[in-house]
Image (tube, one colour):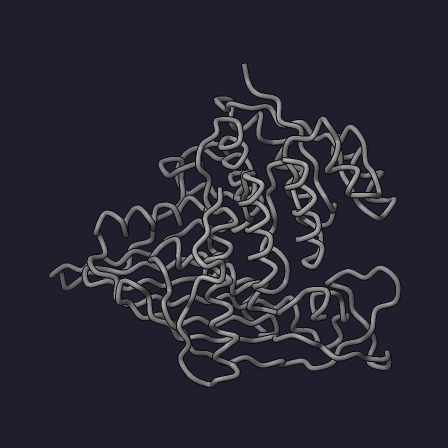
Amino acid sequence: MNRRIGVAVLGLGWMGQAHSRSMLRIPSLFPNRSFDPVLVVCADTEEERRERAVRDFGFERAVADWHEAINSDDVDVVWVTAPNMLHVPMIEAACAAGKAVFSEKPIGGKPEQTVEAFELAAKAGVRTGVGYNYLWAPLVLHAKHLIDSGALGEITHYRGRFLSMYGSDELGLLTWRFILDQAGYGVTSDILSHSVSLAQFLIGDITSVVGMQNTTIPKRPLPTGAASHYGRGRPEDPKGDVENEDFASMLCHFENGATGTFEVSRTMVGPESQNAFEIYGTKGSLAWNLETMNELQYYKLTEDPSSGYTTIYGGDRFPFHGAFSPGQANPIALEDLITIEDFSFLEAVATDAPFSPSFREAVDVVNVQQALINSWGSKSWENVTDLTGGSNGK
């Protein structure tokens, strides 16, 4: 008999909705699971969202106070999908209640908050997961297989980038993402974290870094009332200061001897959601881009003068893909990756199996971020150190 797992979702914004939808989809997509997810309670401060949670998503109930959701006896797992600066207090309460907890990245908005969340969970002994959902793309998993099999030979260089247009409009509103005490750091928390998590998953630990940052759009129109991240002001509206970085770049060394370059921006015009990597080895190379996430470019070094990159198309021969779409070259989408990670986390909870990426991997990412931040001040290379001092957790 499958284990019943009661779920609380804290915040019904975009990510809260995506995770809620994934819970509804899991039974029909993964019939051989060990658990049955139940949407027990959603917490949100907005009445309209609470009504939607029950009416459209099928939650048994919705509450305004997230403490009430966490402390409900019929909740086993808590999903933290609220703004960054609410992550740690929510995680602290979930740990105190002995609940497994899955948090959207970056867990807080500053490295020390991610470390605090990790240490709280480690002390409580609760299982954790973090939303680096791109690691679950079937072709990213295949790239990992190719690298581990030796198909690329010795890895010599990694190029990671996440170039987005979500903040490219100068009239885009000054929402919480641009405020230091609400979001924490800017693109290094928001999207560089995805690039670094991919690199560490595929290649291994980063040992030293140097980089730069810039705030490309220094002022934005002030919002009035509840504001969407994609809302737009008028040229004559009063403006406020953007308090965190729009752009960052980084050079790095990996523990295995490879070199790396990273570049992230939320204000570039052109790349719409270019979360991408290129991996170079002595026997071949790989390239993947979220904008074409169902394609992986593979170059295999041969003596054939006609050799070149081969496009590997996604399909049901790769992990998880067949749950969503049968056959070859039939694509899957972004929210499918969220469903895969949610299924995998809940399966680990139900079977008491290890799960990665956990809060430990989230700390591995912010270890790199902190070294990068340090280099902004020193303008020199900085070693990556473990901000926890080496403690362990689930």
